[in-house]
Image 1 (tube, rainbow, N blue to C red):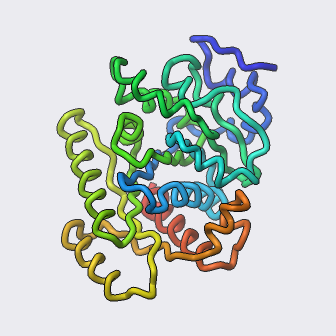
Image 2 (cartoon, rainbow, N blue to C red; image 1 turned 30 degrees about the vertical axis):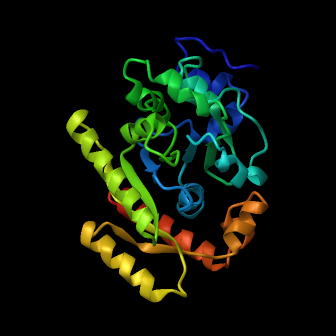
Length: 294
């Protein structure tokens, strides 16, 4: 049965009439509005942003028994590439169609994975051209926030993988998010990217009256063979953003890119590797900071 796209389309009918209905049934009893939305954002590319988003979402689902939706807002589609061994079907719609108002329900763009509790939106090349079309829309910064309102009733956590820039899609993610996690490798260029993102959050707070909470900075791609350089960057981060760096750090580890080559999360491909331990520690720390206090 195909999904009926109608302006009166409600969450319950989406769950019942979608061809993915059976996959969504375990989630149907969730409490309305319970999900927390975490944007994983970084202006500088190459800091492990998507890898962090994927493993945070999978870690929350697998280690903490949460119902998690991972939304890919990056036109490169690396979320689907990283999880291709865990994805068995395609969606009826795309995130682009939802943002452009062509499809009224975001659940039509969602598919389950073979990882318990984790659902994702798959690769969407249309996002590359969506920003220009969205620029003329009234309330263009809050389109994603509006699309997420009914979806919050279905999940415990929603993780947004943002594009590696501060364009309109990232702005939509920040307006929709409750928390922002910023991956930052131990380099001066990455630190400058953090400065730009923090300024954007300040502008959101002053201009729109809302900005997500800055959950923290997670140091990624840490080469532990360079302790002196690492210490210098850590000091610079602490001077600018005291208290924001998370205790968890993600070291360089061959198990992570090898798992990506196989389209798997590192927890599945190499569960005893240092990479799996690092991302497990990150998901545990985020869970304590965001969900354990609720």
